[in-house]
Amino acid sequence: MDKEKEATRLAKRMAVLGMCSRREADELITKGWVKVNGVVVKEKGSRVSDSDIITLSPEARQVQSERVTILLNKPVGYVSAQPEKGYKAAIDLITPENRWAEDKSPVRFNKFHRFGMAPAGRLDIDSVGLLVLTQDGRIAKQLIGENSGIEKEYLVRVTGTLVPNGLKLLNHGLSLDGEKLLPAKVSWQNEQQLRFILRQGKKRQIRRMCALVGLHVTGLKRIRMGKVRLGNLPPGKWRYLAAHEQF
Image (cartoon, rainbow, N blue to C red):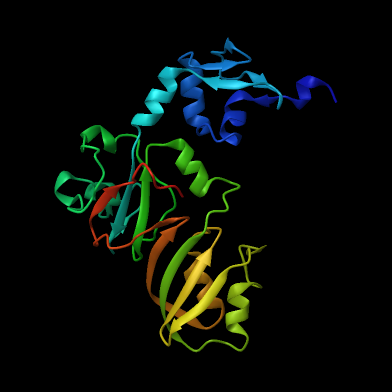
């Protein structure tokens, strides 16, 4: 195989290395803030090999350091991303008034913190709990990228009668959309509530999994993403991801 066929698009390689998202990479490249083997590259379609050394300029690192990530305790009735007519978006809750009084972050709220912010892992309109909103493509890739292995933990209130062997099936053995689901960790918290720990996020996955084993979900709350927990953050309130916190 020749070197041309082995080469990868620069933006894709930067994303694989965790430097940024592909979209952000294209922006940094066109600004002349990316070097390959010490040489500035400005063409978005440029290709590199795995052995090439990619570095970011101080300007790029400064821009990345100014991007913020927000943790919101999403209430029922808000959609994670762009809402359809008649629905409210979670981003509408990111106001100075809704900032948690106990947020210890030194970051001062700026209206620009809402620009370019997107959810990294959705929550249905009728689900509540930890929603991560970020301007940082590196965090988005870490949480919802194709190869993300970050755990997401949920408390799920259910009704109905579990089919024989149902708990075992919830842990491993179910399929959705013609695809076998990855192993999960599912256990009873009490007679009405299950704890789910997943490493993937298909649309309405938990609700659909429960339906396959005879259960109906009446309440769903996400309490953890990776190492970051919802904690005591009140419903409808938000805080900044602290500098020491990592997913």
